[in-house]
Image 1 (cartoon, rainbow, N blue to C red):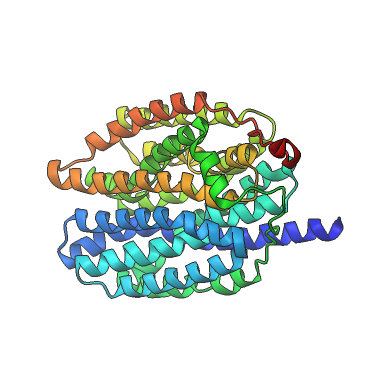
Image 2: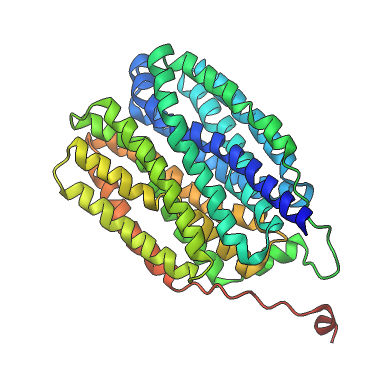
Length: 402
């Protein structure tokens, strides 16, 4: 038993470090929007479209990366993803055209993220820890991603100011390469298939026939729309309203800092209270926070308060959402099923970041997209209210034969 606990602790630690790097590097991409767009003569739509492709590629690849991790373990998925991530950052630093930006920042980094982030790592953790501690463990790993966002953002800004955007991206690529040795050491132990396990095809049929699974997918679409729009476009929104650039970076750092508290707390609460009900209140609170940010006169102080408040709600959805998947369908195919739910998150991310850039170039401001984020918060709250997290009933082998 002690060996099992030590293995679970080591896996949680290594997974936390991988997610810290992957999410920390990604969290700073919004800082490159203005300098790259200005230097290369792009509208903001070019940069926004590349990051929209990144989120879509991440989502489309996630079920396959999850299935690979479920079958062979998370180490292979992380090493492959980390390699693509580092290459994407290196090629992004050399991009001088919209196509180059889309292929590097969009396709390569998107594929890299699918192998180095939540669905793969949380699936491994979910299999390693006891069911009663699963939600808390997922909260800890998700909080580590939040810590990476907080800790690495000042460094990203420092590199940008010191070296310029191209060299800063090269250094970030070298940092991304650290995920390779960390991932290689993350040896989770997927259980071999037994007579009591359902096949991958059966797991897919089971999930797609479950109403709550689709409600969870649609709710996670809203999460992606909100957080990626805010993460990429908030610095530009503040800059357009006369707020200094360093305020925008500080706000994103506050999001990462308070996200640590939010994700850990959400994971802890999810072990004792209804996860769908917690998600309902979380989305409603997000809508209120965004509304207050828009109606209160904008200033550095109001921006900092917004960063703190939205940070508490930022990735709190992740341990709760993955916890529902594990509770309803079990952990045998958790990375793959979690990857499908995450695909909807990334479709939402695509829409949020792309619409932000497209409508900005079209209208000159972000007003329409801000209103959409509030409306979608209400929709997500309603969707989660009708999710039942009771485990799905599977006939025992003897029952199936009877």
